[in-house]
Amino acid sequence: MPSVQPISSDPSPTTTTLGYALFATRWLQAPLYFGLVAAQGVYVYKFFNELWTLVLRCVTGQATETYVMLAVLKLVDVVMIANLLIMVIVGGYETFVSRIGLQGHRDQPEWLSHVNSNVLKVKLATAIVGISSVHLLQMFVDVHHTSRHSLLWGTVIHMAFIASAAILAYMSGPMAAQAERQHAHREHTPEEPAEKVFVPAQAASREDEPSAEQRMRAAGFPARKLLEDFDFEHPRSFDRETVARLGKLDFVTAGRNVVFVGPPGTGKTHLAVGLGVRACQAGHSVLFASAAQWAARLAGARDAGRLAQELAALDDHAVLIVDEIGYTPFDAETTALFFQLVAHRYERASLIVTGDRPLGRWDEIFGGPTALAMVDRLAHHAEVVRIDGDSYRMRRATSAWAD
Ligand code: ADP
Ligand code: MG
Image 1 (tube, protein in one colour):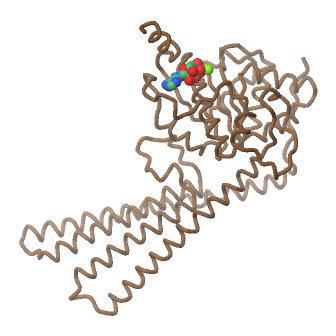
Image 2: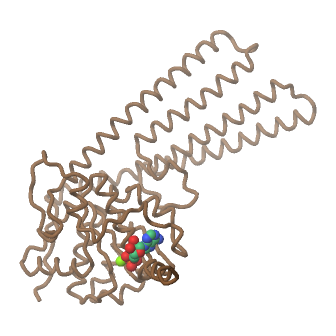
Image 3: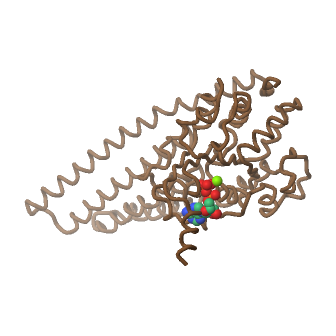
């Protein structure tokens, strides 16, 4: 068999290096966020200081009702500023420096999984409005000691905060929609009928943007399975939160991979197709095939001397699904083809893979020198979802017997 062909590299190495160097400067920001963590510590100290004074005054009977109310508002104020800080620290770091990589940790705040600079701006503006309301309330509670001038300006500034938050929220809608449109445009692909799914993509005009339905037909799904139809209670053990988060498709935009691992019949293909259907509905192009079919397709392209073109053509698809890894072992040459596929899409476009055994045992499936490198790249930036339980097919068979 002929050896695997090299994949064509980027247009200009100098441009790429410069780009990478510039991109790396974002790490200069990292220490700033740790500085803010120190500021967070200062607020914790301030909070307990205030609390201690309040408790002391109450115990010694020096606290009037107005004093208590003002002191409590001050505590609320400190907490709200600390909240604002954490939002800037975590959100800013995630948006502008690097992914924190908590892989959907259970404690992850709700806003983090869909954070982007637009969302962050709106969240911050609302947090500032919250803080300014507390300040205004403090002024009104202590109205006898507040000058008319301070009251007037306090109210005006608060109104300005509200107006700017409203404008930001209003603008973030069209901006998000525009980003979505641009993304859909980039992902635009011509349609191929399902039965001709192995023909490389051809150019198409922009006017006939495919519909979600056309994208689903072109994807070549074995059956139309929806995430909504998946019984999340059936598997014995399985990370429901991760799958729910994957359903929001952030992994597609981030070019990350998803690996479903579990025994037969536990719904791996169902989940992979479910995510694929969601991606089609969101305007992405998807292509589904079994691992054996992918092996045949790539080997065909290699034998025809156009593997590089084939891999480039597959870039038109934001998501490729490789189903049923593990049912047939692959020799060194086929493994090298999978390595090319995984390396080509690495950190740029997604792969959803289903398999019957954990990645640690993939040396039983893939042979040759590229096996380890392939698994390594696939697993890096991948969401690995392990499903354990009985086959859903067997469950249906048993209940049919019972009937
Ligand atoms: P696997 O790929 O893990 O072998 P499949 O995804 O092919 O399993 O699932 C087998 C059948 O059982 C499919 O028809 C699928 O829709 C169904 N199924 C599996 N798990 C579930 C589940 N938890 N809820 C609903 N249907 C399920
Ligand atoms: Mg399957």
